[in-house]
Length: 88
Image (tube, rainbow, N blue to C red; front, top):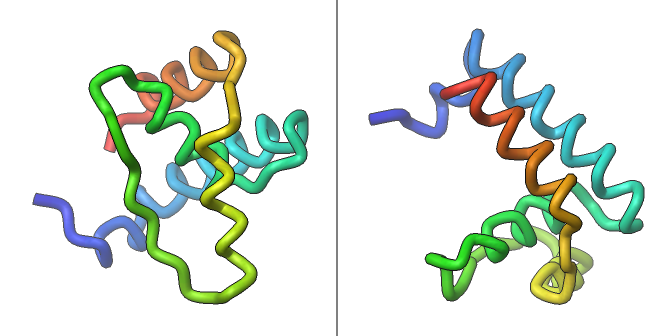
């Protein structure tokens, strides 16, 4: 089992920061944050009916709009490829 603190240690830290950069790149085309893109990616999975996201600041309430983002197939494939090539 992977703990949250393990995700902040090397080599996982470098991998996770690279994933954030990938999500930023995709997010720029939609004018959305990496978090919104991550939620949209989760919701694009037909086996998922809802995504629960915690927020720390009131300005993050807009992230709930992620359910309205329809990621292009190429963006979904880009995220999937990253995860396949960089397993946890």
